[in-house]
Every structure is written in structure tokens, then in C-alpha cells.
Image 1: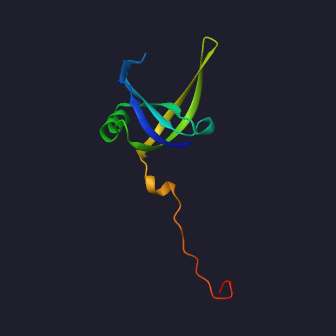
Image 2: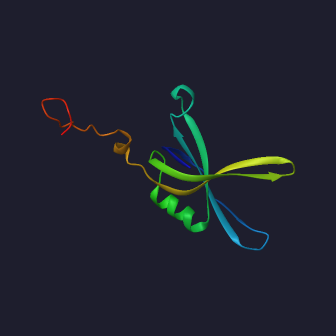
Length: 115
């Protein structure tokens, strides 16, 4: 899935060690846009997992940036409770000019019929 919006908040990086003894990192960040009901603000909290991805995100993105986020939705069960996460796998600067379609001048002849 893909979503466009403005980075509203970047939460502190979380770090830990898995049961197997491997180090991990994850970064949560909030994106807002006006896709909510009747154009109201909608917010989405995305997760980036992995040291290299977290470092790249923090290096190239900051609060206030307009971004496109490609993500997957996943749900996990734990003790009969369900947790849904939006896992971002690609975040890049959005081109604000692309959102408005270009106007193309129509070319025809005097009869109004195409060539």
C-alpha cells in the first residue's frame, strides 16, 4: 500500500536484544494528511525495523517533510489480543507538483473533428 502525507512526529528509536541474542532497532514515525472523513486530518503511525533502515530514515527525513510511504499491514496475536502495525518498507520525499494534473492544450482543426 502507499500513502502520502507530512511527517508530524518522529518518536525515539527503540533498541533491544532478541531471545537469540541479536540486537534490533525500530523507529516509529507519524504521518498526517487530510484523507480523513470530510477532509479532516488523519494520522498514521508507521514502524521501520532494522538498524540500516532506521539510520537511513533519520538521515534523510525530518518533521514537516512531505513523503510517500510504501507499507504493509500486519496483525499479530498475543494472549488473545490482536496488534496491528503499519510496517514501512520505503519512505521517500514526495513531489508536491505531481499531485496536480497538468493541463494539456487541445489541438484540432476548425471543424472540431480530430485529424
